[in-house]
Image (cartoon, rainbow, N blue to C red; front, side):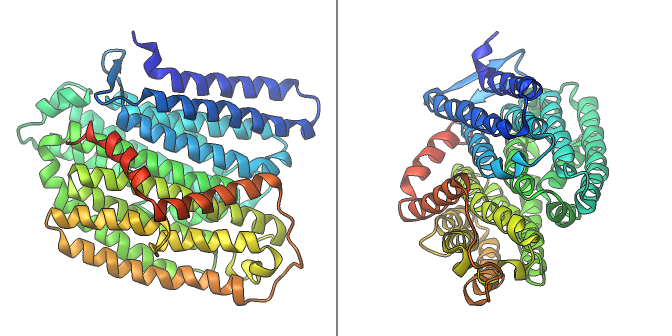
Amino acid sequence: MNLYVIYPEITVLLLALMITIIDLILPAAETRRSLGYISIMVLGGLFISLFYQYHIESSAYFYNHLFYFDNYAIFFKQLFLLAVILTILFSLDYAEKLRYSGEFYAMILFALIGMMVLASANDFLTMFIGLELMTVCFYALTGFKLDDKKSSEAGIKYLIIGSSSTAVTLYGISLIYGTAHSLSFSDITLGLSTFSLMGMAGMTMVVIGLFFKMSIIPFHMWAPDVYEGAPTPVTGLLAMGSKAAAIAVFIRILFVAFLHAANYFLPVLAVFSAICMIGGNIAAIKQKNIKRMLAYSSIAQAGYMMVGICAGSHQGMKAVMFYAFLYVLANVGAFAVLSVVDKQNKGTDYEHLSGLSQSAPVLAMVMAISLLSMAGIPPTAGFAGKLYLFTAVVEQGYLWLAFVGFIMSMISVYYYLKVVKVMYMGKPREKKIIISGSIRAVVLISAVATILFGIWPQYLSMVTNFASITFIR
């Protein structure tokens, strides 16, 4: 049994248990800020150690092929680690005020384990465990502010709608098992090689279940309310980690388990991709709350990532991984800024960012860079990401989809620049906003990386190319 294959998950599990125990021992709430620093140091070490696991033909199984450890999985695990490290870093001020700060960090770490399991899942049983571990933690994190009605309402909504999607996924898995007589992705490839109505229904239900997690239209209805009601650091992690984890396992299922049906699914995915880009961007225009705007924007961003999946090629997978990385960086910057604004101005409506350039010029600059990257404006990294996505899909003959993506990107510039206009032309609500060292570090890392990967995308492109080539050649 290759235990080293699951050493990232074991490390995070031990860390989560240690955080829980230390939280019980520590005498004063003020000293619990150290729990965040301990988590960041351990996760940072794990992030670096995973660089040494990349190999040209790297692949290893664990426990009867339930778990797969390849370059593709390693890349996404590093992506989730980066998202969680930066989220914890800008959550330090928020968590310090919580009554249950230890539980807050532990929940984030358990959700991280779920994401990492999804990246390595090679069996529907493993996938389901990872999916539920991640989702249940997000239910609790969304409703973490017990004295806040919006937070509680968002938690309940997410729980009810998420449970429905779980039931759909589970029923789809049972239909697939009834057809292929296996839950292993590799065996299902053979079991579903001939047409079966029950198998096709099962595949469709699994895809619909994952569409809920990715907030693909028309399965997106939970996203705006949950994004708005959840604590801002949780919203950030939900937007980055949950979506990226669902996309990681979706790609593996589509091109391994459903390989023989992929050609039927790709044109359908292209239509869903276009609907997401159009619906998400148009709905975002009329929003007055930044978190709701980012929720609809995230639906559009999921549509952009689906563009790369539709290509069904190595270039497409590379583009999806490249874009997912940039999406995490841009979201970290935007939500870190929003967490400060939410704390200082008691809200995240457009008016709460009024004159931010005067009260906190660094925050205004980082927010502007993050939004411009999401819009795909050069020289930010988002421009390079969209260029890779559209090039990959055009090579496969989907010129119309690239055209829709280009037009929608231009439309998105309007509502992103509305935020920039409010920050730079509005009257400030506060004379001076004080920023803590941890927030300053997060926003600077996000902004610098977004600009650097926009000017020199070849370095990240090289890593994504290496990580994706063992998955699809």
